[in-house]
Image 1 (cartoon, rainbow, N blue to C red):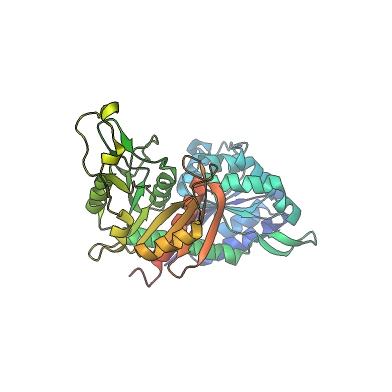
Image 2: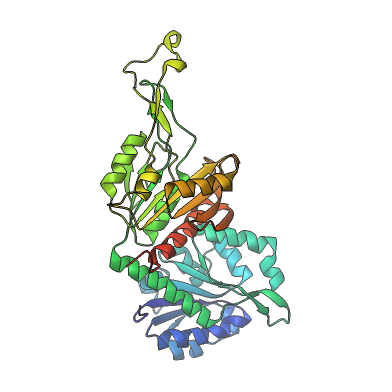
Length: 408
């Protein structure tokens, strides 16, 4: 894929590594990319507007209110112009500002007003990077959707060694190539995905039903993350209090049979992610009228199994998605049971999570998942916001989809 005419806005932060922004600009221009820059007040201590403008062949923006160009409202125009925004170096102080939504100058105002992805390139002393405050800000920014490259381990300008060294311009360029490669393929191939989410309900009579505690939060976040990448996404959701995400086709259902029917209607797709907690069984017959208390006899209610939607998708020879992934909600023997589920259902990936823990289970805003592939390999995404977990999962799914063995 070519990087020609891709538009990069670079925000140069205040740190000794700021000089490397000049090398990055050279690499970007060599790849025929368009580059604009914002030089922060502290960044100006390390590089000059003249050196930057000489390389970009365009104006270097500095002040929030520029009487010569503010008629264009720079903080809006710049963010709308760019395909992606890169902040290098991203200092601990800059991360702190972004984590609380500060908009005190042109750089921070552009970032707060941006409608494009923002890539942060951290650079700081190892102790500053590992400090609890910085790590807390890191999690907040990841949850906000900021992208990160680095930091790396190495010797720093201060003479200490450890994690905190800024990624090299070539590493940043490699990240950008991969970033645009994925988006160009998504756009060219017109990829489609379906996500199932939430619980299902199986009614005994018009009032009573069997269901579970699923909120649908993780599935909704995955649908949002897929849509953000430009993948046409359909969200098939059981009863949920969550608002329908913008830009996503949402199909609301109640029962497992209804969910299955909507899944069938949505096929074919490239990706299927089954996060829904589908009720495993249902009454053989739904009573038309409310069963009176003195007439209710649970032993007389006949139950039958619902069709397994994940299993249906995985073994669908006619319209099987290239990648089928499912969630395995367990309360004990999480990995063992999830591996067994992986084997039985023939899906490509299983995301195992322990729903017995209230802080990462149903209705929580947080999750922790273990990713199991067909070889039995296990990778864990540690506890974080479900939005962050969703972004990680979607990147894994997209990487697997774009593998030559799965996609052509």
